[in-house]
Length: 412
Image 1: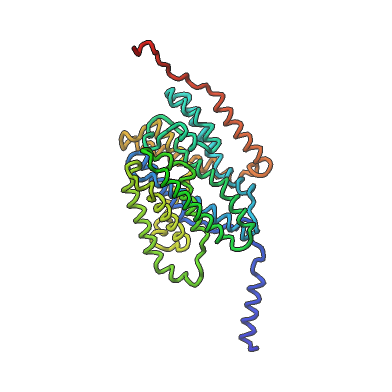
Image 2: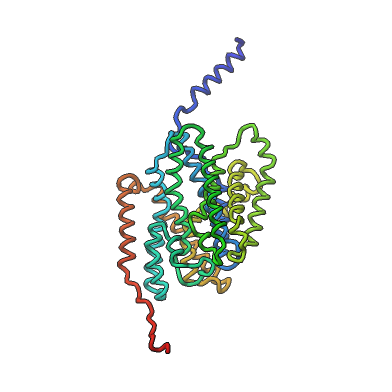
């Protein structure tokens, strides 16, 4: 062995010896700024839709769904790779710490405010919808109440936008269990998860198309079964790593592909008009969700493309960082301020919503999620139980106004 070969062998042995022999238990990946930017675009579309300035902005919810499916599935697969299993208790604990504090705060503040100053009809629907929001079933409750999504944007229900949060929460309950069952089946977990998600998304699409004949498409738009494909397509993309030999080729076409996908998504947002666009419910929503999932995957695998670079800019990133609380707060604010009546009210309502969302993130979400030791373990379980009991007491303790009566004698 020559001196150079001996030196190379020594370097190689040193590298092998200094490599970590253990993996992070949850398989965390580096933070991706472009995904925050995508959240910012999604919430901006929802805000513009709810203020009447972008008919297709409601599709921002589909972008949120695809992001959730991608991120949650990636997290689960990395945990399986690192530990060989999924800790459902730990997963659900993280979801509770992430979602419940901001949600419970908004529900309490809005309910008390509406009860104190709102009109009787609004008070009644708020107190009636609250328990279903708490149970993560408000989308099915609204369907049972025949609350039409496309005709409902008036001062009647302050929690109706939470149907999408309910769909995501139901996904968080079912999907990790299914992934854990798949993981126990042996090798090639990612491939089997991909097949399962693809088949389930196809079934969801078939259900949507089969049920889309009704004059009001609310059932297929807010039903968990018919919207599952938006989450599952994100899950499919999350299971497909980029093979090393094709990475250089991917880099050459990723920029063009990401621009094309972003342009297509933007075109759909500008053309879609809810109930007046029946093509959405016979495959259009599926195609949009697929494009969103592919764009997410490209932004992750090729973070230097023009689209990913633009999405990583600070304004969009910051909107994305507060997007969850902004989604929670904006609709109650809009109901109470009626921003559809002019740009001044629109700007005021958006500014107030953003301010409340920022307060929620920096004073409630982040402290409990990252720094509150009491929110973990046994004390965390007790805190969760206390919050749930407190919300249940809130719905039952506040008296609802009596429903209006009709004097039958005057009808004649």
